Image (cartoon, rainbow, N blue to C red; front, side, top):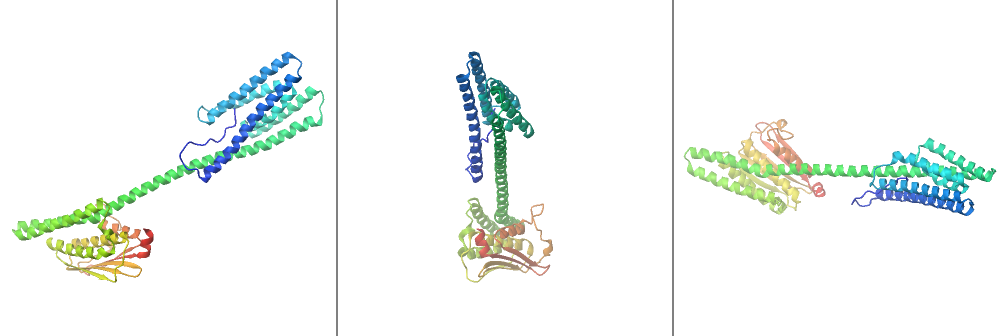
Length: 433
């Protein structure tokens, strides 16, 4: 039975400072264990040699040899068994440790009775008792072992001198102090292993949580992109197709043909958007130099689609300030805001005119959409999508802008039109990319 040491776990993790500290503690414990076993074997051999050199009785020599071999075998068997257990190759034998220790002590006492030189084995036995037994029991056992050594010296010499008492007593005290230090090291090693295990578990849980958060963020991004691309285009196609059906029902084939042409153009535009989306190559990445042109085309497309759907209104584009290069994410956010805002005007405002204004400021870029439609009560705007899936546009736009440090404000009142104002500070947006 040996003192269990902290065993390194097999794994591929890099050696961190915590792992290196744990390895240093394990090295100290391993050195102490090896020193204890080597010391026990050496002292046992010294005792046997002294018996063979000084004992005249052949029977006592043979008895000493047999008992020494038996004690060495018992000690070695317990050491090997506990070594296999600490390496994970055998079940725990801790419950048999006290019985094993009792057998070792009994054999040692018999050898001590035969010859006093076996008293040196008391020192490693002190450490074994201090480790295997509880604190109180180990101190009592150390005291009993010390008394046995003193008694053996008295028995074999026929007298009792002060050095015969002080030697074992000082050795016992030193062993107790060393045993307490070893116990502290052993406890610290166990605590370090537990702390490392907890750290690994925490890191794994954190990685899993980050993975979930990343998955959720990606799903949210995909939902926002689908709404801003495919959903808006399909909504326009539905409106124009209804108008085309109405024209056919009225016998106006020319108007129906024009609206079917509008449906084809809208579908082509949204097909291009879908391809860019699938390839993760959004055309908004073209930057500030193409943003104004794309917004002009968006205004023209919205006006054309609204006219075909029978809800015609004028859409005007304006640019204030000198265009400056914009980060791709900022340009994409402005493009999606323009899409969402104009789609809402076409679907709900019943306006006769809408103005899309792109403004460049020294520290920010703005996008304003004004319409002279019916207006609305801003208190009724949902903060998040409704249960039926509607109301996602403004909520998704706020989320997109929030990632860039931007803001979205809506000013409106029933019968007074609506102003949608987007502002993105360039310094914050650039630092977040």
